[in-house]
Image 1: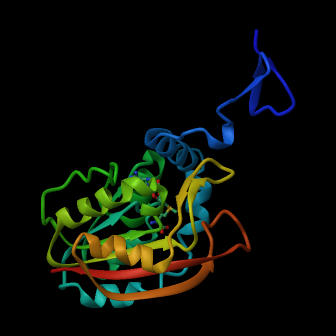
Image 2: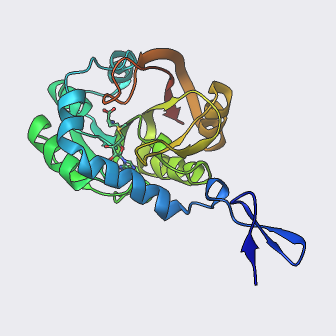
Amino acid sequence: MATSCGSAEQISTGGTSVPLKSPRRAVTSDSEAAAGTRRYYDDNARIYSEASVWLPLNDAFEPFVARLTAGARVLDLGCGAGRDLRALSLRGFRSIGLDVSLPLVELAAQFSGCPVIQGDMRTIPFEDGAFGGIWASASLLHLRRREIPSAVREVVRVLASGGYFFSSVKKGAGEGPDSKGRWFTYFEEDEWLAVLADVGLAVVQSSATQQASGTLEKNVSVDWFACITKKR
Ligand SMILES: C[S@@+](CC[C@H](N)C(=O)[O-])C[C@H]1O[C@@H](n2cnc3c(N)ncnc32)[C@H](O)[C@@H]1O
């Protein structure tokens, strides 16, 4: 009979130690990671909305919209509570939001007055070339690292030729759930630029910024990369 001994990470049987699958090393599937993230936003939608909708726009917002054709159709991918969606709409763009969290979809629609659909950015439910611009602020970072290249290919698919794509991710290394169950994948700037270049996007502007984090953690400063790219 196996009995545990010493460390909870191994069992000893007949003098031979057999490592157990440690919780810290347990494999998290893509769907488990996505479920943890979604649960967090579903459960905290209202407080997240109150904390995020009046935050200042990203410094890259003006340079991004300045490049778009007037009245272009723009997708806010992972739009959260709709802060950027509203700003895009106020600038005259035909703006549509997409988010996986239904409570946030409803709040974003209310706040922005724009159409917002519930969907998953890994399989964007729009036609090829449907958008002149795609804005993904702090959203792709919630996918597993191995899922991100195909998600960015989805972005390229629904972006029109000559269209612009904004993305922002957190600086750092590794990936994993935070204390609240949200999955985060971190990048160094050259890694993020390589992800974008690998799908054929041309970098127009890349900047590092320090900003208040995810809105619920007060007084936490986080380094971000924000990039504007163009589909050739
Ligand atoms: C950090 S918030 C950013 C929200 C907003 N873009 C902003 O900058 O305030 C991340 C958003 O991505 C959404 N999200 C996470 N995983 C997603 C997925 N697989 N598909 C679509 N949206 C997702 C979350 O529900 C959440 O609204």
